[in-house]
Length: 561
Image 1 (tube, rainbow, N blue to C red):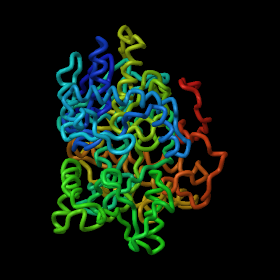
Image 2 (cartoon, rainbow, N blue to C red):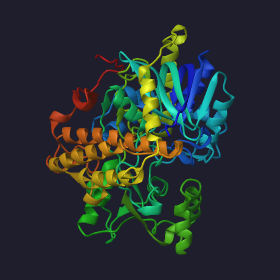
Image 3 (cartoon, rainbow, N blue to C red):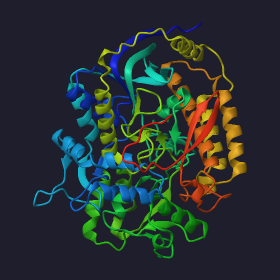
Image 4 (tube, rainbow, N blue to C red):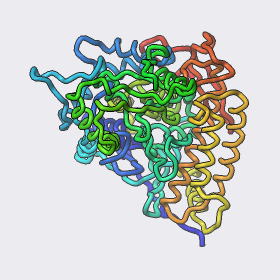
């Protein structure tokens, strides 16, 4: 029997896809500074969704006393070996402190010293008690005027005509309802992409990873399919983490000044460098050289730091605190073993994402991107996501969209509804969604620079990856779902496969190794001045077109195409 889904049309001035940090703050900005109506479509529930779902113990992008936004730009530019958008970094950094203050006014606890100053951690960070960061944001959104939240709505596609966004379409993951959401401006704030590569831990523990496993690259995928220009997907992010627990290492490295050492006790970070990618690369090389395991040396710190670390991780990654307790040894009595994660595509740490102008508008008119889904602005973290949501919101307000009505019968919507319904028909597919996902991760791991090959790849491997991912994508068209929740899994797989294809294309077209481990190209192991450029891409007529763009040097950038 064919399944028939209910079709609901929802109209608003602004549609925000993704109710995480950037999406919520954009909604608050729109509510407080305009009379525009706003709809947030969130796959989970905004109270505990996005990268901040479990909380965070520091603001990692803040202009501390004695520093200025330009200093932050210089740091991020050096860490990314020059491939950044300085206009995006500067406009974000100029707002780091003001958006932090806004969060404090919402109730965020920021640690202060006896003189009332924020407690710093390093040159760019301040300490917070951030377990309730996301609930504070969510509560403010729920109380905001003219903001409607649609929880449990999985958006799959943008509605675009003549390179102008008109809304989006998706479905409820519990109820048999399709939502056609019409809007005059759309902000994509869905986060980056996890689960493309085989993860550190297998089986039951496979979701114990650095980046949220529910962030599937949906925002990237819907933009790619709609013809938006993307940038720097070849600058993958690999996090250096506490082994097994995949807990953060920055709290140890910056909080107590622990050095990276090999099994011989040698401090190797001085040998390879201390940029984000070099910290991972050094760990990989030491293990390859037979000098592993590698550690963060906490055994030389004082016992007075033990309680500080145990509490810090209990507030952010409790599995690490439990591991210490289980071992019967405090951090000062043992070093912490470290390893790299599988690669992710995430614009909050690297420069991957939508190609946007300074106001965060993409190459599709009326379509904006903020947070991890927006490219060109690495090391922006939580405050950068807040800042970009605010920047996009103010630009939407400035466009005066209120009088532009969106009334249209989209043929694409009806095609998409039939596609959903076809997946829900009773059938016995040869493969399950989970089996194809595992196949995808195995291909990316072995042929596109995953953990098993030490993050390295060559042209032949990438060609095989492209061929095999295309085969899996073809098989994904024959998957079946018994309910709306399983339907979501099918579209999450399709999103990941779409992103995989773009990642492979980008890795093939930066023919150098600019960031060790992040893009370790064995055919082109050195730097090449020819590639002091952005590697961008756009899907046109079914194929990915690569676009090389000159580095943006001006303070304000507008799309020229």
